[in-house]
Length: 487
Image 1 (cartoon, rainbow, N blue to C red):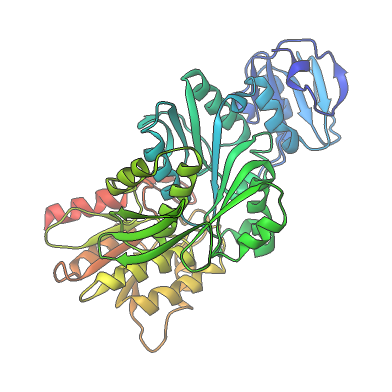
Image 2: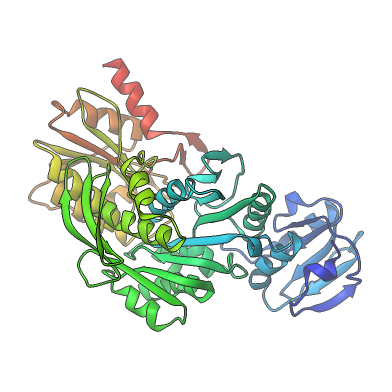
């Protein structure tokens, strides 16, 4: 494609060269540059692409895009230099142009919120798969077309970067996908990854403290979430979360609301919580419709409600929605039970105060004897939530083993000490074990029978552990199965 077409409808200043030349690759990583590449110099959180221009030129870049005044050591085969106000702000539009604006031919459903994105997206995907049109799923659990996982690596855990995202949408369009369900993180919204995408539906699950290492405060965090609805045709909101009022007052799209407590368009009634499922009714078109979900917890009702409203808005028959939810299989790493006749062990991704409270409160309700929890907190992330999570664990658990999550560049012991500040000093119901495998083993050995419950939280579906100098394979589910098989 001509560089000129890639920059169609984008303000730029041509510092040098000719834009009537072909480009067959667009990248933000100088190591991925090849002949006829455009290198976009992103000023990132850790690295600045402007510092790697010469590397890009050495690797064959023929065009570089900058937003700073840069002196080049050499031009090599460089054929154009383009300057813009912000490379990050124009990147998603350039990527969309390069891949032929694939999202224009897709029904995009974006789901944002601190908790519940993955489960809600998973439910919606299962429901929409019953329709004639192909579905695509993009999020924490990877990329799927219908139920088939696509081997596509992306560098961030929830929402792909702008170029990666457009490449995935292009691939889905070529596979005749019609409906795409996307988890949209606050980082992705704040960093302009989805700026060029028009969403048919934007959905908001909830907001609670998380990611303040990036957003600084809750106002900035909410403002990032709010950006999804600037580009949405229809907004679907959890009205029980007070932030929904802010979103409604700051956007002009059509809104539909769901709730358990407040009066809303889709309100759950006659709720019945069991240790392995939930039942509830929702009034739809003046008819009281009953739903069953084989996943416990009040939070599961919110996720199901959001999925019901999204699917109904997409034109799916209520009876079909009911049937799909009734037979839904568990979401990987979300309140996932490890098969065992002797022990009751749950793997969960909970890594924020709100999500940890949700899972522990639910487990407490169906645990007859001891509730034990193994958890830690991620390094290089929001430190303020650590004592909050300690306080929650101390409140609901009989015993906790504090361990490593993904410590990254932080000292695991320092992270654990931060968590310990929140524990009830009178109860002193915890111990520490930095080695996560040993911590899980200790916890299992503390179980008496299946009347006790062990919750292993923080990593869920993840099959790795990140340290300062290495990343290793580590899967909580695999570790538990291995320990159980040796008993």
